[in-house]
Amino acid sequence: MALTLLVLLPLVGGLLVLLLGKDRDQLVRQVALSVSLVTFLASLWLWSSFDAASADFQFVERYTWLPDFGISYHVGLDGITLWLVLLTTFLTPIGLLCSWESVEQRVKEFSFFMLLLEAAMIGVFISLDLFLFYIFWDAMLIPMYFLIGIWGYEQRIYAAVKFMLYTMAGSVLMLLAIIWIAYYHQTVTGVVSFDLLDLYALEIPAELQMWLFLAFTVAFAIKVPLFPFHTWLPDAHVQAPTAGSVILAGVMLKMGTYGLLRFSFPLFPEAALQFAPYIAILAVIGIVYGALVAMVQPDMKKLVAYSSVSHLGFVVLGLCAMNVTGVQGALFQMLAHGVSTGGLFLIVGMLSERRHTKLIAEYGGLKAVMPKLVAMFLLITLASIALPGMNGFVGEFLIFIGSFASNPGLTAVAVTGVILSAVYMLWLFQRVNYGPLTNPRNKGLRDLSAREWVVIAPIVAMCIGMGVAPGVFLKPMEPAVKRIVAQVRGIVPVNAAMMSGVFSGTAAAEKTPDVIAATPAVEGSAR
Image (cartoon, rainbow, N blue to C red; front, side, top):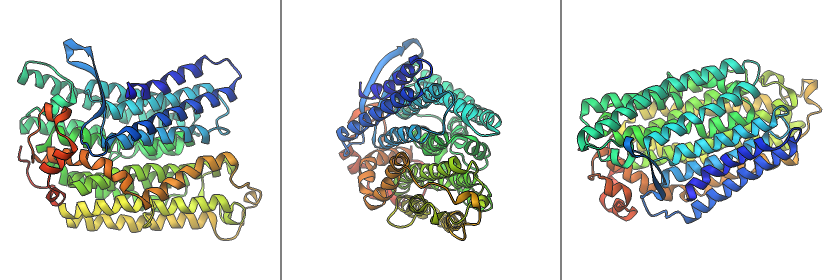
């Protein structure tokens, strides 16, 4: 019941918040924050109890739900989803705390939607039934839609509707593909099934794989967002409240890359290996394009938004390499981006709360009046540009190693994104924090408060900790990554029994040699 409890805690907490009386905003904030902290502690217990040597799904729960349709409540956690769940529970209390003073209207509803969003995001990561996954996938859109539409900035309605339309369009394609593959299972086995482990073992003809792969991948590409499906993201980020931007960048964008790794590639391996080089090209275009567009943005929040388009391109590039090194780098970069970009949005939010503007030209010389905030800003900036010793460096380094084995030419182009990232981020930092203090409105700005220290300190600690001790994060994910890479490349036979328990971490290490890490992604599948 551990994983179910992880979903129920924020869901029940959200309902409890709604039951609190009127004009009790402070109590609402305290209850919501307490529930999110308890959820985070529960996720830490999962981490402490997790067997890092195993590739199995752990803490598995499976109950019959709609047996006539092959639908069950099936959840589990492996080394891939462990860290994404922890990232979700880590950022949610930070999002609530950063909104402690900035959200003054409808505090009860805001807290409810934040907790509901947390429950849905956790559900997405732990679902092992495609129908259950889709329920959570669509459920998380609703609270984010309201967070942007109610507590956002001037053009919040436009941004909220655009966010919903884009993501729903992709979701419809994915739903059709889910139904198709579930009933194809029936034509082969005589039993309809939405269970992911059953579908992993299904032999799907190459032509059918192509269409199903495209349907799933378009939905996930919109969520990443992968070029050219990225246009909804800058509007959503700029108009969202600070907490919404933190969660959107920190967790929700990772659901696209997670979907590629968990569903698109292993379910349809032949199609995945065929399309991987072309997806990698789109990823590299996004890396360079996002960086160049970020460089010319006059708005801090929009600059950080376009930086996400660029950085998530690195993640997709690592996934398309489909070797152990590249995929591990992609997963690590997902975590690193969630922490550092979430931190950048927190810094922008703190400045915006003080000055009510996000325009870079309105700032300058802040180091003289806000040295502590500027110091935190600097550390997060260095993490974002992948300085060695910070979290961003580890993920990008592994991605480049893995991708180089697959496609040296694309990797060489992608490396320019690192240089461009340093240019636009350091230029932003210089314009905002250095130079003369010319704007009189900036002279009386207060430095970090005690609450803001509690918000930003964990982010900075993670930026440094992940860079100094990456093995803590890489070791638990390695067995699960080897399993998926082996499955996609057809190196070992895959069946439902192996996926549900026999395929242990030791077996994965024996049957998946290290040479996988150097296998080019353009090779055909052996399945």
